[in-house]
Amino acid sequence: MPKPRKPWLEELATTYDLRRIDQRRDSELALGVIDDPDRQEQRFEYFHPDREGNIAYYGAGGSGKTSALRSLALAASITPRSGGVHIYGIDFAGGGLSLLEPLPGVGAISDGGDDERVGRLFRWLRDTADLRASRYSAARAPTITEYRRVSGETQEPRILVLIDGLGAFRTEYEGSVDKAAILQLFQQLLVDGRGVGIHFAVTADRPAAIPASLATAFQRKVVLRQTDDDGYRYLGLPRDVLSPTSPAGRAMQVGGPQELQLAILGDNVNVAAQAKMIEQLAEFVSGLDCLLYTSRCV
Image 1 (cartoon, rainbow, N blue to C red):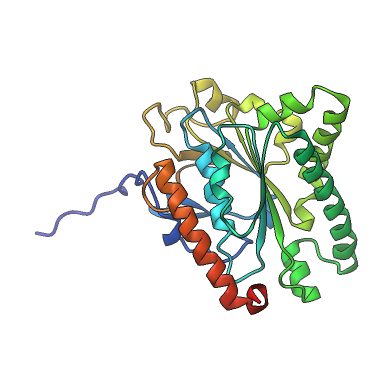
Image 2 (tube, rainbow, N blue to C red):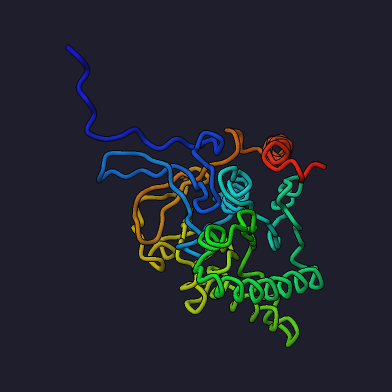
């Protein structure tokens, strides 16, 4: 007799290779694989920047939140069927974003303590947002995707800004009048950036690191393993899905209790292995750009 069908799906794997997820456009950036028991299916999950604006990852140490930022940047580097993405990073954690520097789409990865570079980045973002706002308004385009379509500027780049350690960023930039001005620019861009193709992806080690006044600007919230049950309660999530033994990258999403495993490049979470694979992807993406846009290689 044939083996009876199980009334449930197999548990999510501990790793999923980003290269095996259908990632082609900057309007939907691959996150990983989601388990949807109500529909009896496991499917690819995406972040939609035009609709959701910004994304926040909450997680305790070792839960995989820095890897999540890197994976989002890697997904944003694979967009052969749309315009490209320019990526900038501000690192207030352990330097994990520096692995992204070989990617051709990465403009700069700044250390959180480099006030000059951080300030210059935010002032440039503000100027870029203002210039784009006037152009998009004239074209009656509410998003960068729509602007590309109606204007013919198909290669207008989307901008993705990574901040690893938002709590440390707030603590550092609330300390003086000059730095507070940079924090104010950040808060403005969280709201104004979505319509002109400027988006933020941030990490926080606890829910309180992102106050309610900022949390509303992050329509996609991904919750990794927390230090205690209070973190899940604060975000309105069940306490019995994730545990201290959950693998790095295992997460839930606010607004959807389905379990999610965030993707990485390859299947080896070792930092040295990730660095090598990112270098290989950088070479591949550079070659792909040359094939698609010959003028870039002249």
